[in-house]
Image 1 (cartoon, rainbow, N blue to C red):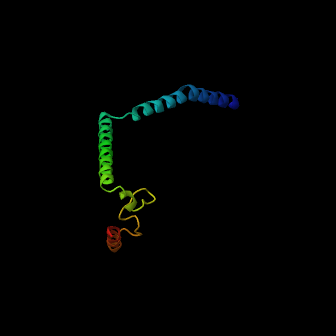
Image 2: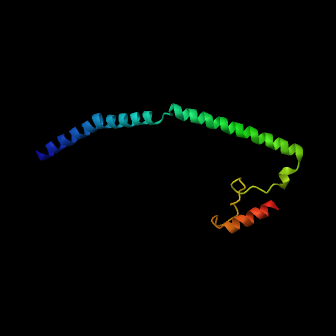
Length: 112
C-alpha cells in the first residue's frame, strides 16, 4: 500500500515537472534572453561615433604616410621594427616600467 502511494506521488511529481516546471523554465530563460540582447539607442549612437572616429583617424594616418613617403621614400626602413604586439612604445623593452631611469635611457637610445 505504501509503495502504491509512493508510486502515485512520484508519478504526480514527474507529470507536474514535465508539464509545468519545464515549460516555465524554458519561457523564463527565453524572456531573459530577449530582453538582454538588445542594444539601446545610445549604444548604437556611440558605436556609430566610434566607427566614424576610427575611419577619420585611418584617413589621417594614410595622409601622413603619403606625405612622409613623398618627402623620404625610405622612411619605413629607418623606423624601428615593431614589437611582438605590433606596437612600438617606450615601455616595451623595459622590465619594470616604474623604474624611470630605464625609461629615460630607452628614450635617449630611441632618439639617436
